[in-house]
Image 1 (cartoon, rainbow, N blue to C red):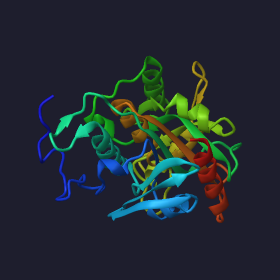
Image 2 (cartoon, rainbow, N blue to C red):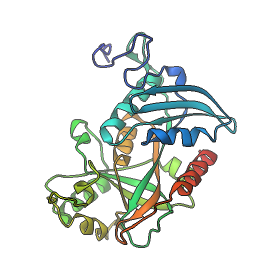
Image 3 (cartoon, one colour):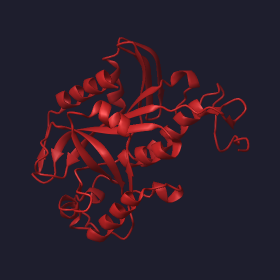
Length: 287
């Protein structure tokens, strides 16, 4: 592979990657990702110590120790575009020689765990529950710019969701890390998560503007692929991009969510701090 140009991989004056403002020494083998920048502090307060902090735009990073394990926790803000920036630059930090701008011969595989919040699509998923995503279903267009390999099963589900929900586009479907799912999620609800490119119409909400897919919520709630026994369990805005980029970059990636709303019951968990904190502690102890 040719040398990566200065405009393809932009570095700051101190040699750090452009958006994250991090150096290779700041990336641990275990990386916890959150959307909300304020949630970085909610994770790192459980650390035994915090050795490094960096604030750059919505990308806030803390590096510390938890029970002898070195962990990097980072925020991305909302959306799959930010996830692409974060995962691409994290991978560059560990798998590109930033001085020669050439890929390293020996590649490093990170363990990346996204901790988020989500709304349930099934009536029997209670608010306050913890859900781990086996598959991500991307309604965004990020993978239109990559050649994402999908299994035959993923392709069938993708086409079937498009058909049953009468979508004008084809979603992408990708499985997360089986290793991390088994390690972290043995007592969680195992689900299949829809990643939407917005919070309102793309998740079946209507405020003042009419949605193009007025039955989207029902279509996803009642979707069922009998051949694969595949249901859709929850809405959020990042998981599918994590799983797709994890596959493309060869990292172990899994997404866990605290369920803070049930869209079918129209129930929202106003005080959801404990559910999130319990999930954070669970991940830290198991990763």
